[in-house]
Length: 499
Image (cartoon, rainbow, N blue to C red):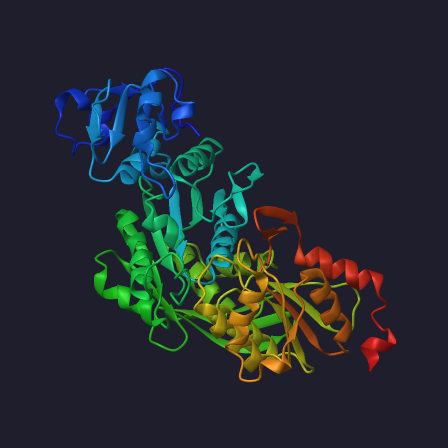
């Protein structure tokens, strides 16, 4: 996708990338930047980046044939080019900077809050946006659920979009009158420099556990990638850290910017004490300095209290009073696919949750254990072509915390579903006690049929997703719709449920 400035405006390359040492290259001007040679138009700047399957330099001649003003790359091509070549240390970093320059540096026109962490990014981002809206600040949102530009909601294929899309969305937010923008920042995006060119006013870390080791070579590399969010902070930017999380607390020693800390165990500037929790409501006391105020939210769990603390810290940093912050927290009664309640008149609880890591599964199940008087039945799987080492840990977490474990397909992608299930079962001490049903719809239906009054069914792993990836096909599938269809079709007080 091309990023273009206002009509008739041009950008001088040397002003965006002052590190380039060729005077002729620095004088190059352009009004659009492109990474796909097929979309280059006369006068565009073409950035040649190396990808997993293709090297952008292989298509430089095509871009030149289409009239590009210059080629930006971080290595020399094998043969000379018939256009100016601009060498930079990192082409992806340069691409992000160029995209945001062409878009008019929209993050400088907004207060941009970045949220990263293994778990809780989506909910925390939504909570921050809700607080800002409650305080009267028009706020845009970028994340796993999609993008809101201040007027319209649109889809986003990635948690953190590529640099060109990110610049375009932020520019639309500024045009639409947003004063703030909240964006989820994934470890992949940080590692791939998708966020280059963004200037954050706040960087929040919810927690850093184990995830994405199919991509990052080690847990240490994953932690380092997460810490890259602080490099995006503008001069007067601040950080928010959950100091009950060891890795997040460890980042304190690396930071020179102002920091607000939150926690319920370690000493922190914002703390909380849980008062009572029910299956549909959670109350806690939020304390900031000498002021304490109760919060009653329809979203439950200790993990949710931490999300609220991070969001509240951002609100306080912007001078929002505690009553308004609480109103913002309480206004958000649910986040799609995050412990989302399914109510169809059944005499037992049903929740759909995105939990797909060992920690997230353990957290969700322990949260529900405290408020459910009956059994917990958990339907779950694991994504294919992803971190295989976490699968036994996921299986162990479910066996320890649930009464009935039902293993099924998640998004198997190009991996054999049977192998994924075997990996999950490796974490069970008694694998014969688990039920395996690879058809996800059948597994959900079977589990709902086993539920008795007072029980709780948890459908984990896919959350808000409305598709299932099997092989190279993306098939329409929504856990929430499947559960509702089964519940409406079957009498909630049928003999099977009353046994």
